[in-house]
Image (cartoon, rainbow, N blue to C red; front, side):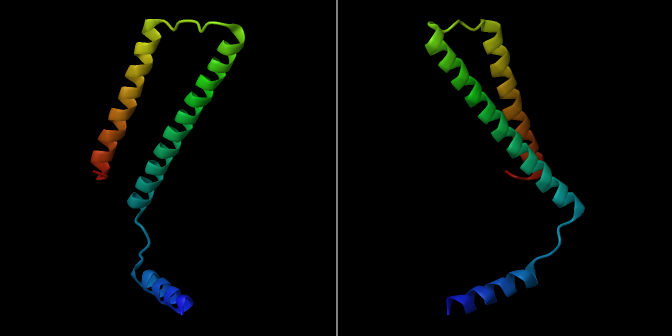
Length: 94
């Protein structure tokens, strides 16, 4: 009985579904690429922090990071977030 319902549901979806336009396909591709990039960057930052902390535990006290570097990193993060938000508004995500 559940198999019959699944088949009927699949038929209904296939009747309604349409091939995406080229613009819609590229928009989906860009959104996926952006999400993958953000996840990759986040994974890299976490791995980098883990490596630094591991080395710090082995070597002693953690060296201080210059204030300018911290500011540059924070500004870069804010710019990326604002860029994603602006793109999302233009693409109609929000």
